[in-house]
Length: 563
Ligand code: ATP
Ligand code: MG
Image 1 (cartoon, rainbow, N blue to C red):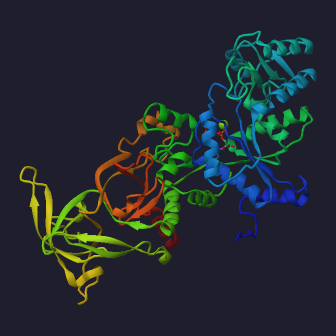
Image 2 (image 1 turned 45 degrees about the vertical axis):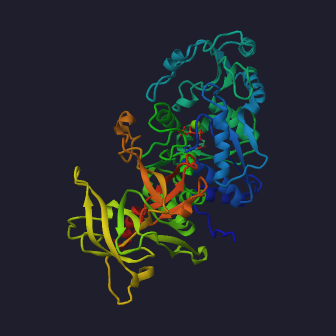
Image 3 (image 1 turned 180 degrees about the horizontal axis):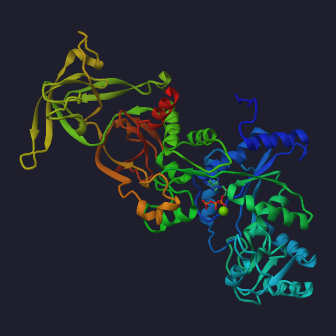
């Protein structure tokens, strides 16, 4: 059942509720998600997607997907396809409202001609460097271009010839004629069109002039009848320019609303930086499970539900801040805990021989699939003479606070029996322990002792004869510092965590995981949540660790509640 929110949960929804009361847009709510197809989407985009599609859904409105494809040199069809896949995977649907700014190139050109005719735009022959020089600074006004007062006829003629390809790249621009002394630099005769002889992924070589983002974006919003044009804070200073264009064109005005972009600790959220991680080979690709991209998170085993929940929880604000990665991980755990089956896997195996277990015996014991959800049932795990346990679960000389297996000590094997360590074998060359000898107590079948005898530890294990070999990839944060994009960090590559991937190749998992499909998820008892990687095949099972079991966020929250 859908929950009906009693009052708007954030300031954007408040503005929209107010607009609906006053009838500003005739009760219409129409938002859009406008990515530039110059990279894969990241978790910051997920926030924007949840906001735009979420608001439309909650208010019975519509949300468009629009590619802001005005920059042909940086855009690729691969990005367009990945963005569509990611939006769908997150659980949103643009129905028949898939648009491209390039759909409007014809209209944008006509509107530009209209502005020239009205004396509000002119063709300028300054180079890019000169335009920058003339622009002035925050404290100094700009200087007017010597071409500013060129006649309407001359600008019209030059603009037409720009379009026809008569001039080389960078030789001329079309600029809005606004105010070179404006306190807002965006208003100092911004460039509307540039010459660029480049193939566009949709319009091919039809155009050799391309509209600038600021001009195309506001006109696209207007043409699509967007009511609330939601964007990040850095566009606040662009709003007067958008208003100017739409006023001069006597066009329909959406309401722009700015919110703070999401920053996530220990990672970077900027396509420019993410592209560098991919191109410089710091990660294996856009969908590397360490990447904060939607495709990386998908491969890592994150669920769309958990990501949406995270986006709801962080809310929207007017001030920039950094959200702890621990909160995102907490949301993932919370979701996976309820829905995924448990299994046993040994990541760093140590061989255990149960000396009082007959050779060749295979015993089937019952294990619970999910203690949180009895409806998920039970499964069989097989117990036999040779088992594997986790290397870390044994110490020859246990320190005081180590309660797991040690010589002479008894522990419980989950779902199986109590075992006692009676001896061990060391590699004579390295001194490494290579095998344990243990005895099991047949009276403790299922892991309960009939005489009320207590053990201080319960270990996971697998049967050596039945377990499947597997590769397990463990991930850590890509960056060592909480804010690698912070101003003090300099070159971000210097804060990269060089140990963000650990590959374990001699792991063993329960036999029931043989046919686990890529993408399927499990909790490996005591180890964390894992999913099957697409690299997994018949010869080799490959798992990604999605997230550990240690919930640092829950701890932080508990502490905060206490104080
Ligand atoms: P980046 O800096 O990562 O390249 P961008 O803003 O250039 O981001 P766009 O493709 O233009 O990327 O973004 C599409 C939409 O997603 C925009 O409306 C933008 O405001 C929003 N968006 C991008 N990054 C974030 C973020 N970190 N938090 C919230 N929204 C974001
Ligand atoms: Mg952008």
